Amino acid sequence: MKIFVCVKQVPETNQVEVDENGSLVRDGVESKMNPYDLYALETALKLKEELNGELTVLTMGPPQAEVVIKEAYMMGADEGYILSDRKFAGADVLATSYTLSQGIKAIGQPDIIICGKQTTDGDTAQVGPAIAEYLNMPHVAWVTKILEVDDKGIAVEMDMADTVETVKMSYPCLITVEKGIFQPRLPSYKRKLATKDRPVVMKTFADYFDQDTKRYGLSGSPTQVERIFNPESNGEKVVWEGNGEELAGNMFGKLKELKFV
Image (cartoon, rainbow, N blue to C red):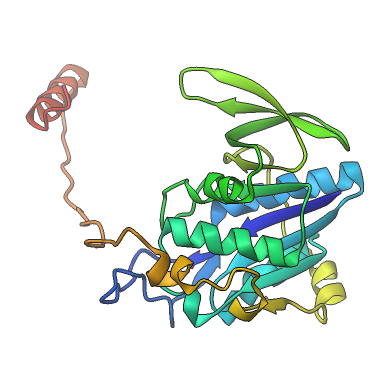
């Protein structure tokens, strides 16, 4: 059983600058593994333990993204890859998904790919399903529970907001998981020592089978970000005093003023 997990290094703060192309400036910014990817990684580790599988983690980003691969090693991943090349820079959702799908082809065919529902720096929730489309494999998004898994396929529950659906798929397939599917384990210091010399493999554009530069980076991005800005902070607060009836009246009046009721 070959299990792939796509992870991403994201800024640890919302105070991030934007360049002239509408891309986040990540140099010099404290980063961490995308929180949703921790749930994907934990799901993969559960499947690895149950099916005696091999877990590969990959990310697209600059060389410093090695940090999140090393973190995955400390949690139990077996091998890791970084897809990194100047030709990949400035990619939108479509180009990012294509780059990841072609990177997966260059590494080797997995039985199952697991992604977090979305990233905290993009929030599109589109990359996982788009990877599956490019790889021509079935996929299910918003997975909240693994119902059954064996060496033939997987059955899951997916949250459809108004309904919960049960889906069973054969391999190869892709799922994106919600927060709370499993509680992510902490990185192990013992594993950190055991994996400190484990290599992280770098894949560049030269390793790809598809050498059409128009499919990658800015050239392969049909959408452009018009504007990115930090949310306005509002530190205003109001303190009311009085009995329960007075406080309730004040609250109702404020909610009406703000047109919440």
